[in-house]
Image 1 (cartoon, helix red, strand yellow):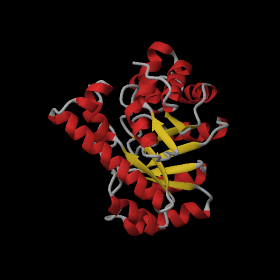
Image 2 (tube, one colour):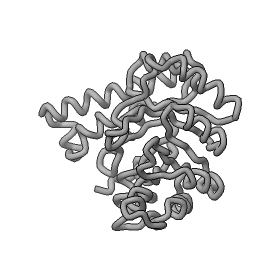
Image 3 (spheres, rainbow, N blue to C red):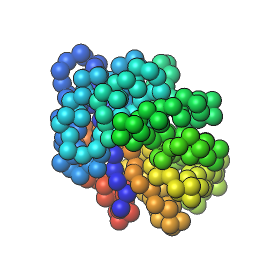
Image 4 (cartoon, rainbow, N blue to C red):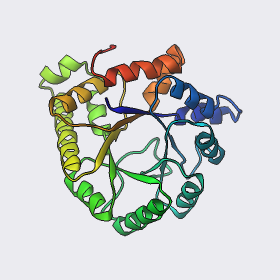
Length: 262
């Protein structure tokens, strides 16, 4: 069974909206851990819009499961990551004006920087994942730079699928469905290609309780092993009504491909 990484950024988003001490991201992370999360993910953005530096240190100190730190490739973030020593860092592109990460890391443009970052993190025994759009060139360049882990950006697939039920998605010939299937094929092909190069393949961005099942089914049908799905916003949103334990448990069930909750 694939692992589930739970991103707790949006617990901090609620806290920062009022500048209070609550809700506490560390408490949320511990609840997710107790509910069966296999890893906790957080993104320390340059503008500190949600997760703060102390959150990252406290997560590392208090978790008994792996911590993945999403970060831009900057000198400041490299310094912080080397000090915190998370299990994994996930390199992502970052723009101040974006609501959330809008695309994959610019591997070709920043190849030399990536190669040096991999050297630095490897010397600290910190694993490195690179968040990339599903295309062969980026995957090959990550491997060439010495990378061992990629996370495929599933956003385009999720945007096309999110308002559609599974049967509708597979049977309908409307433009949205055709686009969705095309994005799914790209993800499947990219996953197969990355695994053929010996890379560990993760997936994430925009995944929710409606669109995860078709993706898991497609990977299973094509005998593709995804190591970890990293999911945050939908789990935190669902937890407002069900609690974190139930929200995490529901997503774990969907990753087994045994149930469709909707």
